[in-house]
Image 1 (cartoon, rainbow, N blue to C red):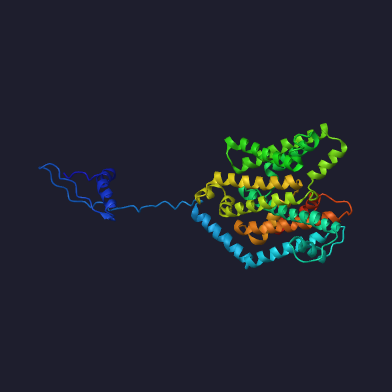
Image 2 (image 1 turned 135 degrees about the vertical axis):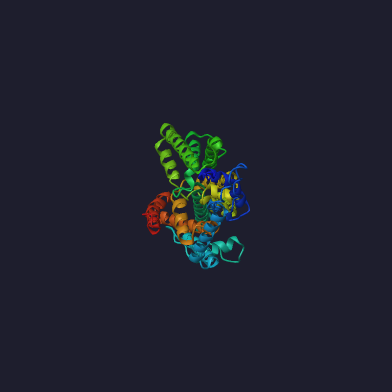
Length: 421
């Protein structure tokens, strides 16, 4: 009697080694030997057709897309194409912006309650550089050289510093509302200045500008101490900066309310709102040294800023040392802000609206954005200070008030153009 043919499970067990061998040798069809015959007395069963085993196709996993150099590179290429479309002749536009800044400086020197002509300005400059020109009367010459020129140059330097600081901090923190005063440096400068003016601490050695600079640097040091354990994450930077700023603002108000009289409070309040009136050649020289160095350091980190704008993971995948780069950029922004605020007080909205407006015009790449932001910030603050001098003449309005009045509608206009409002 013939033996029963193997069941499906037995056939599968018999076929499994051959199937594995077929897959390994990349064969698609494998035939299995017939089973061995039974005992000698039994009739050998007729061979039965064995099922054909087909190797299963190899399923490969889909490629994993990560935010690595390729993705970041494509994003950077897209951004560069956008910039190229917006700025067909970047050098020509940069030259044009420089000419506009130079013309704005010359026109702002003439703007004011006193009547100053172009020839008066030329004669003053010619006298200082040793040309054979007829000198102006001493009073008019002092008005141009000792008051107007330092003031206008200080406005340009401070405007460039604040605009670049705003662009840097917006990329580092990935926060569109970041401005130079995010780190609490402005509040520290205010506390230092009030301490010198009201309490008289260090008044003979530091003065108001020195006290404000020391306070700003101490505030930034406090920020770094608080961030030492938690790291330099963008969210922690924003929150810690807000905490430090609120603490120092409370201390400033406490000192004013407890120790100052009415005249001192009025003078300090006027300084806190920002004014170019204290600008003199010695403070202009300090800003003229610090500002170009800070702008150059920020510009050299343009590629790192582009990577940080996409996030820490993308920046790290591009080979950027995220922690060290953030620390460097925070130090640069704090130094520029500290010098600016210590010299002329806190001037708001320049570091907020100028980077957004320039980014809308020339694109997001920081190698292009930072120079244009510096020029735009300088021109904006030069003309804002000129308006502050003549708006309510002969009384002068703090320039921070004018920047806020102009900054709010301009910021709303930029948001509307970008489709975010």
